Length: 195
Image 1 (tube, rainbow, N blue to C red):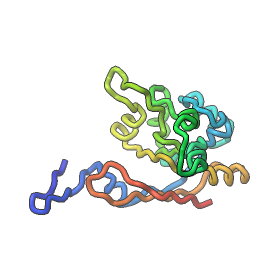
Image 2: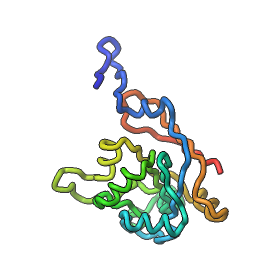
Image 3: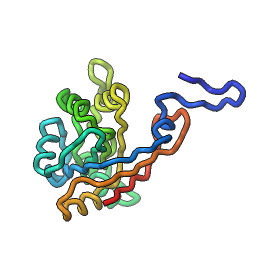
Image 4: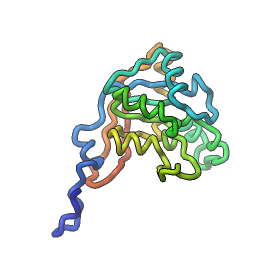
């Protein structure tokens, strides 16, 4: 791990920082799974069983290197609320991955996906308290620290979900470059889907 430059005080970056991901960007085949269409707009935990069901229902297939995009409708509902979002209403909206589902974590590893993005606030369910091992967000821990799969949060996917559904498709070309911020662990992105 590299520390700050002693002369300038600026960080030189870390081998695992977001700046490393920004060097080549995030670009590849995106596969959208429309969880809202299958399970509705209410809050629901999605484990391996539910995700595999959603893939089967939509006909979406995942290959190594794909970027998995999960449409829950949460970002659209948030956007429609304007400047005064209703926290209580939002707390009951949108599917969330069940990071405590070991079968889901195993599927993520075995699938070879390059990244996961969702239109909800955290991608996975955020429990009130950490597990007994101290991990609060097990999917984040698994993806980011164990296997190097980046996560994208609060992507607006509703327009894309509608277009793909109307054309009986689930795949598209995705470009989502992060900012090159030396030493940072995350960055905003402006994802672009080419269909």
